[in-house]
Length: 445
Image (cartoon, rainbow, N blue to C red; front, side, top):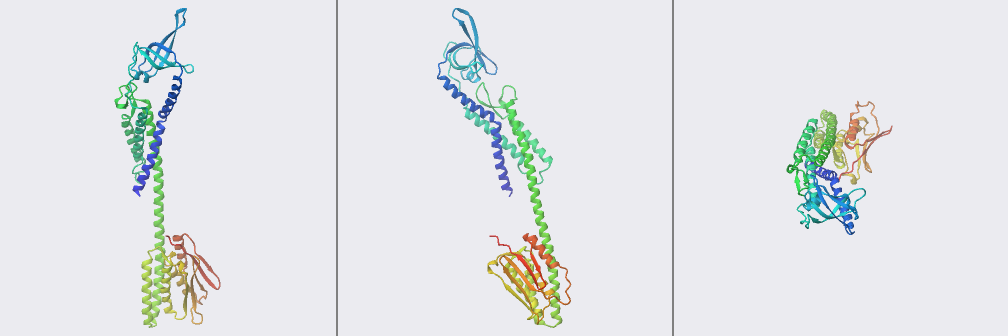
């Protein structure tokens, strides 16, 4: 069970880590799509004739710059010129190894809206053809793979720390805060292993290799989002696990309570049956009916053996209960020779159906105890099946002097039936007849 729960937790953490990785890298993925779209647009514009421009490059420290160009307003007035700028992004500057102050002849894309033109192709660099493009950096696909892999591993690591080995002893606030401390330390340590793209070299580097400031706000934001999600999910997971553990404990306690109540009810049956049996045996001994007494002892031994073997079982099959009823009935036939009869008609199709153990004993005992049994009025106890119900019936012949009764027998039977099957028994009593209908349970395959 623990291995199954561990696997389930790992799978859920894996899925959450994938989703979280896509979320924190959404802007990166979006930029790739936009860049691809812009590249397609630029290819279409390249088919158009672009005029040439010449000017001096002014490059900033972050790699971006402008080519400052001059244009004469009129050939008649050569001194009347106007300046305009052509934007150079850091990739172009890096690919062509451009330096601040280079004189460039180039083509440019037309401006969009009120923006500046952007450089397209460099024709001359300081009067010479440009050097081969520097392109020793990984592809954009490799950049994306590195970014996704790092944040996936970070997310999965933090989630596993927050959710692994949680049991009923690990639901305390102290334990949760300890886990939060661990993931914060891990996030801080992993920050220096986070990948980023160095615009000067175009290579994927780690934060501890950064030559400039040690804080990259984009990497910090991504790591913080992963940390916050892991902490919140750890709290939610802990509460759900605690709730599940409480439900399991309650179910366990409920089962123990039912077993205790069942054992108590069975314990009430055994003394009741034992004292009745001893009274019957004492009567035979007083009457010097030794053969009947020995036969009675044999039958009594069988019935007690059945009670010992099945008293700890919650249910028995109908066939077992009927066999016990026949043996139990023989105990009464010793006392009521030719006066007491058992009419048993059981459909064999229901032999494997189950019912609570020791069900027929109190019904037979009560029928014999509370009714007159004489040669002129022989007494019949009917045990039969009606569909999936077991019916125990007898005519009512109350004794002139009723036997004292506490009602424990029927009450125990009803209580045990409700505890074990969740169903109730049907008791119908008229002036002439007493009938009990017991719903049988279909055997589990």
